[in-house]
Length: 423
View 1 (cartoon, helix red, strand yellow):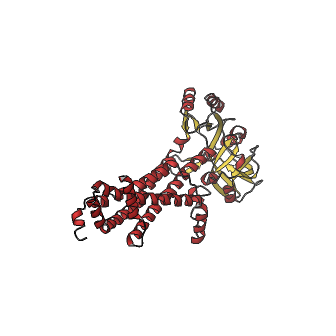
View 2 (cartoon, one colour):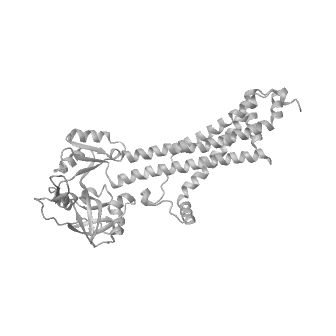
View 3 (cartoon, rainbow, N blue to C red):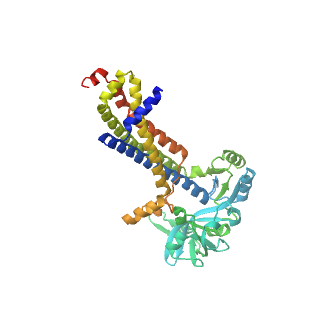
């Protein structure tokens, strides 16, 4: 019964009235709500970035890559493919090298992926990304992205030239005195390969679309002078890319002379940066809620001064210091609950309508707020996680409740005789 009284009294003290205290209380609730909303939006965007980045990395790559430990290329990739399949995975030989694209008198450096479409199509979903033309890599055919097509001003059916940097490098050598270069004596006449653009693709990942082209595995071997059927790596896929320790162990046991790297290891720096940025954003933005907690403290100190005589009367009627302290702590708790709940709704709405809001401010400012050239995605990603929301809400309520600690302690120490002296 005493506890119900404390809840009721705390709510009565906090109930808005036409005075300065109620205005300050509303401001405190607004501050908490804005802090919680900002935290939710920022962490949702950071989580969305991380999730979509992982999805794009897996969509445009493999779960693991297997390389030769001694040579530039794997002469017999079928041996590696069979070892991966025996471990329960799927694999495809890949040639992944730098390439120089020539269109008339213009040269642009890119990266080339040579693959067998029949073996890799089920894992690298190229067919669904084709925007124009066909998903075809017949002899002397190439698929490029819409970004590269725009850069080179080419379309389906146009022809481009591909240069192998390694073969170009063999044409010259450094002079014996170390000053300058000269034509290599054993240099062979080298002509670039001509390819027809069979299709234009877009994976929706700007950095990948900006730099990658696809050709057939046999054409890639011929372009770089590799033996027929060779590959620079074997891409492997498993059922669960986030838990593949068992498959990796089996593959390493069968292929001790090869190097195996997972997609997390290949992209460890990028994934690490995203995780650190998300944590730093939380610790920095939680100070917004902390500032709101100080506002609650100021509000309750004002309430303590205004309610001095009432506190003295309560103590004279038998209310103990614990009761008085809990009444004021509950006020901070109420503000935390109201502000957190409001911030949760506001943050969720902003996350849900993030694209219309971003487009509105882009038109208002005349600037693109989310240029894909910098962030690599075509739209602003966001993903609200239950754990993040729980941490934000609990942290906010705890900070607001502790913000009332000093006013509660001061109210609990008031002397009833002094409080009622001038009553």
